[in-house]
Amino acid sequence: MKNKLVQNIVKIKNLAKVYKVDQKELMILKNVSLNINKGDYTAIMGSSGSGKTTLLNIIGLLDTLTKGSYQLFEQEVGCIKENEAAKIRRKKIGYIFQKFNLLPRLKVIDNVCLPLILDGWEKREAKKRGLVMLERVNLVHRADHTPKELSGGEQQRVSIARALVNKPGLLIADEPTGNLDQKSEERVLQFLDELNKEGITIIMVTHSTKVAKYAKKLIYLRNGELSSGQESIYHKLLG
Amino acid sequence: MNLLYYIQNAIFNLRQNLIKSIILIVSMIFAIAPLIIIFGLEKGSNAILYKQFQKLGLDCVQATSPKPINPAIFKYGKYFQAISMDTDTKYINLVIMNKQIPVIIKPVDADYLIFNSFLKITFGSFIRDVDVALNNPVCIIENHISVPKPYLLPPIIGKKIKLNGKYYKIIGEYLNLANLEYQNSVLPQFLIPINSKNYKNIKNIVVKAKNFQYVDASAYLLRSILYRYQRLNTNINIEYNAESIKTTRSILGSIKLGLVIGAIVAFLIGGMGLSNIMLISVRDRTSEIGILKAIGAENKTILLQFLIESCFIGLLGGIFGIIVGVAICFFVSLLIQVELPITLSSIIFSFSAAFLLGVVFGMIPARKAAKMKIVDAIRFD
Image (cartoon, rainbow over all chains, first blue to last red; front, top):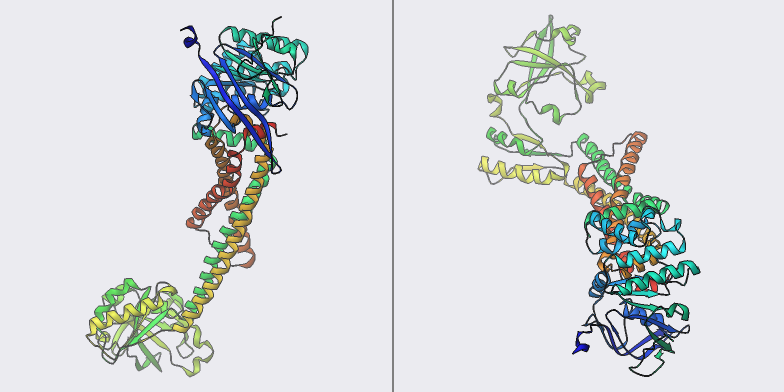
């Protein structure tokens, strides 16, 4: 009974991803099955080329799968049309990238508002919500600056504000602290921790065990496969 | 996202990439300015040919009938630029200042001057429609070597002269430029308004087509009118210079074809310039496209973004192209002394062409941008 109340955010079964490079097929992910529930804070780890970013991209609907089934927010998205995928990305998912991926030509506030503008919000309303998000990451005083005028840590906080502006159910973070100094790294990780405590599901790719320790669950990928069998892929890092 | 947002974005992007925008607008100018110039050249060459055509009287159609022509056909005058008739002339011996001068009295209508471009009014005025309608006794005399001098000076206006037993008021004087050098061998012609008595003897009628393109249509019309009013089925002879019209049409056709080919080439060159620079712009903004798509932009949003940008450039380039085209036409007109007319239709056509160019040649880069894979675009440096 209790299990039924747990909402599956991500449910992947026998996922495979194949890339074609110079007429050769390269299998990046094979036979990946996993579940991520609402409120989970999951880290995906693995060595370079293990397929962790590819898996994260597929989970975040930035890439498509080759085989298998994938349910996101209890909706089958394995063969979803691009426009529907865009809609889910816009309304339900927030993205934090290693290189921040802010648009350098836009002001900080415009970067934060962008997902709302793309969703058809009035500019004034979007700006209001954007400022609330900047307030949350303590950067409201930088609203009218361009990203270039900000430090790496500040840029990543802006990108977190952008990821949160649409009140997402799932936060996807690809090496969120990869380009940050130690102080900024801790600040960002603490912030992600706070967000998770508020109930936001987070999936993060990292190669650092120190960063992964902030997560409650760990998925380890080796050569495109989950390291420890089929279903029991979660490891408690604690201890 | 609404149109205003796309337009604001397009302006923002154009301002951010100023050099690229300037190159884009210049390539648009290369595409659009020739359209204006070509329109001007086409209209200008038409006007020149038409002028020559008129000078030679090739836009006239002449009808002759063995029986007098019914004057009622003159009410069809509105279908032609002018309509005139030939009537019997009369030779008289005029006595002026105790001198006997043989002159020709020629009844004419108000349009006579239009058909005889070699007649020049030196002073006074020509016979008007009202003079013909009211049968006014007025006359216009020829500046001729055999006419005594006092009759060739402006104070003569208003004086009366007795022609064929009837007094006529002199209203003007004209010079026949065609026989200036051999006035000794021709008699002076005094022109009087054609009247109903003369009408009875009309055997020859000349019409001037409204445009030289309508010469054969005018001939056809004149024939139909004459048949209707004359109730004759034979012997109406219609003459016009069909061969010259054909040649002129073929010359104009060749000019037009050449100009159209020129316009298409300019259009394609400009369009390809626009397309190429937009493709570079798409490449430069690949990572931006990836980010936008990652945070939820749909393919159509990206497509519209670039398409509206290229249309905006098209319209902006169109405005500059039109300005440059008009300026070139103006200076070329001054330089070669031939008017290259700018018409509203040529401006509207060029502006529409600029917009179309933006849509057509902006489509390839816009589609390329819209179809980019997010993961590839976002990693692009």
